[in-house]
Image 1: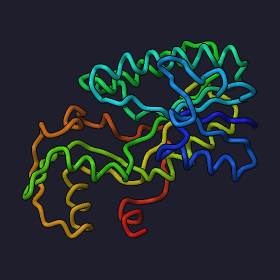
Image 2 (image 1 turned 90 degrees about the vertical axis):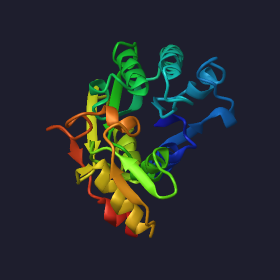
Image 3 (image 1 turned 180 degrees about the vertical axis):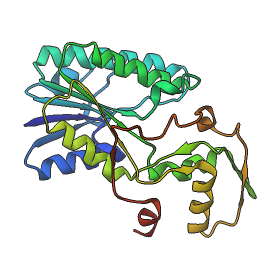
Length: 244
């Protein structure tokens, strides 16, 4: 199949393109560097011409309330172009528990994106995943100084980006789900515990202090970000990933 991968040069997109190409598909990456602008619609018709599947891995440039309009506009434009081009399957990458954290503008924005896809004119699949191992370092940087890292006890169940990419590629190469498939890592951590493991692995001697208000994930309560019963559990543990 010909598969257009929007956001195809990023962390997930570049891996998805490689997996699909190795599977014999014509996977074509599209990004601003190739002339794609989902907000103006520039490059969309060209990107989707002849495509059997479109995979949307693009992301808002901000996490604030501006992300809501960004996802609304970008998804509306993509669906219109996909319908015009006769694309038979539209895939979007989303986040586990996204509807359970309305306090976060970015999560509300992703709900808007999902809802537009589900109500749109193209057969679809939503791939929901938990947080990436690769983002742990950035999460620590949000609420840290030279001696201390402040983190909440929020429960997370992260996974490797390579397994995120494999999940997206597998769904993209299959028939439309007209529904959602969820994936999560094999271990549940309190975010503060995950921080301690990450710091120790990096020989970083800063102290992790519990702060239930620290960072964006403090807004997630209980098991909001944790795998539910129908979730596919991937294999790679955080310590295995660190050792690799």
